[in-house]
Image (tube, rainbow, N blue to C red; front, side, top):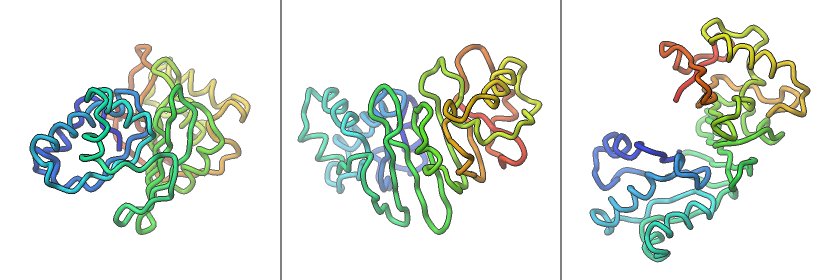
Length: 232
């Protein structure tokens, strides 16, 4: 899910193929480059080295495809030779053992929140989003819930509805104050209303870019009932 800056080399290394053989599908939440720019690198790798392979299923808003086309001098045909595009939000779709459901979540460009389910396990991912009641359904009973803020200046408001009133000790003072302030906000200012969603694990994907840091030792996913992790 999402191929932002620097993700492609690690993806190709993980599948052991310089042309992406073994990649079953790609899901992109929206067209901003920090979420999709390395998709163009995957296109080039497949175009020049693996064009005889079947197109890779690509699940993404149409703005992602249009941005790829712009990087290839608007050559729509070339993009669709490499990728078998399926629009988001739409579906549900079946991806091998997974069911993919998606929701339109608020951002400056069309953004799809993603929910993948297989064998009773659920991973939910917001993409970049502001508060929205649909996040409750997206994240309900998720084993892992990954959330990102609307902008790099915005506090991580979306995920904090899941945090217990006791703020974990490892947050520095400024972020702790922000969390406490958020937890006192009216429900309509929160990403999720009424506490409907209860994920098993919570990953804070990105904290505000204001000098607030979380100690590196704590950047791990852990149960929500214990501590709140942060990564990225």
